[in-house]
Length: 175
Image 1 (tube, helix red, strand yellow):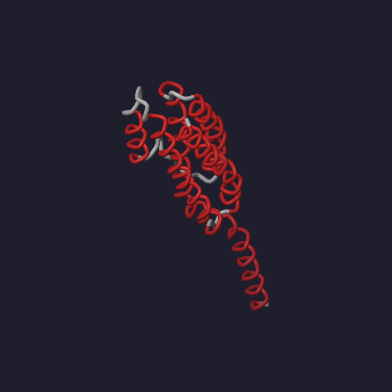
Image 2: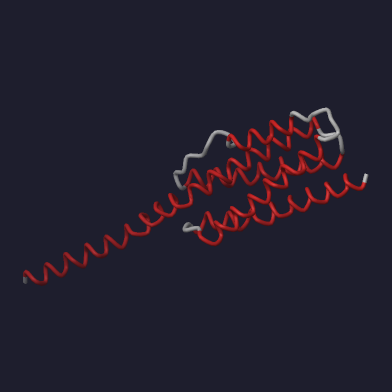
C-alpha cells in the first residue's frame, strides 16, 4: 500500500513538473531573446527618428519619400515588438543606442548641405544591413517561436527598405 502511494505521489509530481515546464521554458526563451527584442526596438526608434529628420533636412524627393516609408513601416514593426516584449515581460530601452544617436547627429550636422542626402542614405543602408544580420541570427538561433516569427515577418520589410535606399542612392548618383 505504501509503495502504491509513493508511485501515485511520484506520478503526480511528475505530472505537475510537466505542467510547469512549458512556462519555465517560455520564461527562459524570453530571456534568451530579450537582447534581440531590445536591439530591434532601438533600431526601430533610430529609423523612425532618421526618417522624420528627412522631412526637415532632405533636399531630394527620393530621400523624403524613403524617409516617410521608414517612419511608417518602423512604427508598425515597433508596435509588434513592443506588444511581444510586453507579453514576454522584457523591458525595452527608452531610445536609440548611443551609437545610433551619434550616427544621426553626424548626418544632421550636414543638414542644409548637398551632402546630407547621401550621408543619410549611407547611414541608413548600414543600419539596415546590420538589422538584417541581427534578424537572420535570431531566425537561426532564437529560442522563442513568437520572437522568431516576428523576426521572420520583419525581414522582408527591412530588406525592401535596403533596396529602396540603394535605389534612391543610385538615382542621386545619376543626377
